[in-house]
Structure formats: structure tokens, C-alpha cells
Length: 496
Ligand code: NAP
Ligand code: MG
Image (cartoon, rainbow, N blue to C red; front, top):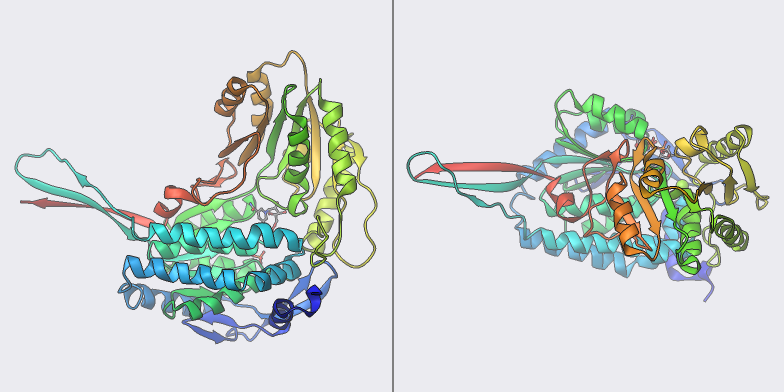
């Protein structure tokens, strides 16, 4: 059946074209200011929907409803019931997966095939993984030594009302990755999607009502970083902020949250190195390196954007990547054949193009920048830069676009020297190593300053902690650490 006449597509387009309100205390309400903004289809530049633009007053209202739920209805919900609610939400998401994939593709421009294969299943996996943790948040009994008889133990309590501030590159997946542990831990939330991609979070809020979450547990506020995001960070009733986005905004959140020492988790930018050793399995490495920088049009926090290939294989690797880039089907997100969609916005298009120009001016060889498809969408070509050096902005700064910087590893480079180059970055989110020599792989893994090291492949998994060293962030998401971050640890000591 033609995608555009399918039932899920009709539903997604209906949803996208409706005006949207804020979700506060289980109700849909306009912004107090009655202000709105538009969400756009990056594949065409056309406006999709009219969205309520929340500000301080709405935040205050949402915080009060989240606090009421935290102390009332949600407090009474047992861990097993929280687990069941999260599973119910994941089942509903699965039932509507195709509609969500289409909505995500429309709003963000990402290829439908990626939304189908990665984003929606990723969101479902997060909900299910953390559902299991709801019943496993145990403390410990502790042996203490003062004179007398004692019973001492720890308990994990929900940190409280949490503000979840999201980016636009993986809107639903990020929403689920933050919502799931927060809810499993017993917190109530105020979720702020990025202004560019609010739609799937709003649709998820509808499903959360259907799943049976009590009013006020999940509040969704749409709007801009300032005033909305800032008001969430500043509100004294918000106990924790979990933020994914730019390092600049992450730093501003730290400063503002210092006022009341809010808990913070930050998942920020990256400039992740990919190391290809001379013995690497190039048939696997080349397509993976290409996917790692061109996937999601390079708008991935741990995109492998700095390539260090051994000089024995450098030319072959670059040629292979150019070939992959040349064969990518670039087009509108909703075309099921599209492998690379547009970037998310005009601003992002200008930002990425600006970096490519800067690279050229600084002396990089532009091996491929290619022509763009016609039309009004925000399209940029997969780009490969060679002869780049660490003095260049294209190597130092996060581009968040499909731009690979290629550098050679010389024959005499020792592992320490290779690692030193890879570590010569303000960031430390991800790193990838391609070699058949396990000893080399593990030696490099030890030396790399990165939150996640992938050897000969790998992806995201909700069980595996994810986060950054250095300017890539604070704390970890996913895994045990990911749920602990939504709790406070209380020690109780009893004189017997
Ligand atoms: P951003 O400004 O950091 O946006 C991320 C989120 O924070 C959005 O929801 C944003 O709202 C909100 N926000 C903005 N200013 C805020 C403030 N002062 N207080 C609280 N919240 C605030 O990122 P961007 O401008 O969309 O993208 C710029 C660059 O950030 C990208 O090019 C990329 O380098 C990096 N980035 C990294 C990731 C990642 O996964 N680590 C994700 C996205 C972007 P608005 O939607 O209104 O801006
Ligand atoms: Mg949009």
C-alpha cells in the first residue's frame, strides 16, 4: 500500500496539522500568554503545526501539578504498578509505531527507515528496560561500628520533580530515555521537547493518559529554551534537571542550578574519534565509519567525526567512505528509500555550511561537498575533509552535521601517541576502534578518555551507561547509574 494513503500516515498527518496545547495536570491547556510557534517539515521547509509557547507561568502551574502528583496519587502507586504502567506505555507505542515513525520523520526530517528501525524501537526498549528497574530499587543493610546494637540501612527515594530538557536529533528516543528512568524511580516530570521537534512528545503524552498514568505525573511543555527551558531550570520546585543538548547551554544550566543546588545530569556534545588500524576489517569498518558520520545526517552526539586511519590504509578508507557517500540516497525523510534526510533547520544548515567553508579556508582539502538536491528543504551533502589538523575549527568544534575530518596515523605512531591525538579534544563522549588485534584494542580502550568506547562495532543499549568525560557532560544515562541518577540515597540508623 502507498505510504501516503495508509492509516498510520493519515493519523500522523492529522496529528501534525492540529494546533497543540500544553499537557499540564492531565489536561490540554493553551499557554498562559496564548502565544504559539510553528513546527516545520525540514524536508520542505513548510510549516506543520501551531504549538503553544509556554513560559514562566505555565512552568509554575506544571510544577505545582507535578508536586501534587508526587506527594499524592503517584506516591501511592506501587513499584509493580509503575512497572506495569511503563510496559503499558511501551505496548501502546509499539501498537502505534508506524504512526510515530511517520510523525518523527515529518517533524525532524530523519529518514523514515531510521525512525522505523532505530528511533521508535529504541524508545520502546528504554521504556521496557527501565520498567524492570521500578521493582529493583533496593538499598542495603549496613554494618556500623559505634558501641551498642544498631540497625542501619539505606533507601533510594525519588529525587522529586524533574525537568527533562530534550534535543531535536532523536526526539522520541531521548524523551523515552529520560522519562523511563524518572518514572521508574517514582519521580514526576516536566518534559520540554526541542522547539524544532515537539510532535512525538505531545503524542506520547496522549498515550500516557491512555496507559493510565495519573494526572500531573507527566507534564509536557512546549516552547523555547528562553524563556521556557530557563524557567524550568530556575524553578525552586524542580529538584533535578536532565538535559541533552549543546555544551554552551549545559554550562549555563550548571550556573543557574547552583542557586539551589539542583541535581543535574548533562549529556552534551562530542567530537568522537574513530581509529582505524592497518589490520582492520575494512569491509566492515568503512560502511560503519560512513554510517557513524552520515547517519541521521551527522546530527548525533557521539558521531564519529574525527577519523584517524593508519597511513597504510588511509587512502583505501577515504575512497571507500567517498563511495559510500556517493551512493547514499538523499531525500525527504518520508520517502521510504531515503538514507540521508535534511538537517533539522535553516539555522543548522547555515551552521554546517559555515563549518565546511571554515575548513576550506583553514586549508582542509574538501574531497566531497557535492551538490544538493533541489527544493526548499534543509539539505546538505555528505562531506569529507582531508589534510585536516588539530589547529582547525572543523577538528576542534562539534559540527553536528555530515562532515568527516580525515587524519593519518603515521607508521611510527605508538599507541600512546595515537591515543594522545584522539584525546586532544575538549570533548570525551565516544570513541571507536577498528583492529583485529584484541590487545591493541584493549590497550587503546584504556587510554581513550571517552564515556563509551566501541571496538569493531556497537550501538546504544539501555542497559549500558552512556555519557561523557570532560566537556561532554556530567553523569550517566542508562543502566543502573541511569536510574540511580533519579534518586536520593537516604541512610537510616536505628539504636536497637
Ligand atoms: P540547545 O540550544 O542546547 O538545545 C537543547 C535544548 O535545550 C532545547 O530543548 C532548547 O530549547 C533548550 N534550551 C536552550 N537554551 C536553554 C536555556 N538557556 N535553558 C534551558 N534550556 C535551554 O541546542 P541547539 O541550539 O538546538 O543545537 C545547537 C548545537 O548543540 C548543535 O549544533 C549541536 O552541536 C549541539 N547539540 C547536541 C546534542 C546532543 O545530543 N548532545 C543535541 C542537540 C544539539 P530550544 O528548542 O528552544 O532551543
Ligand atoms: Mg519540525
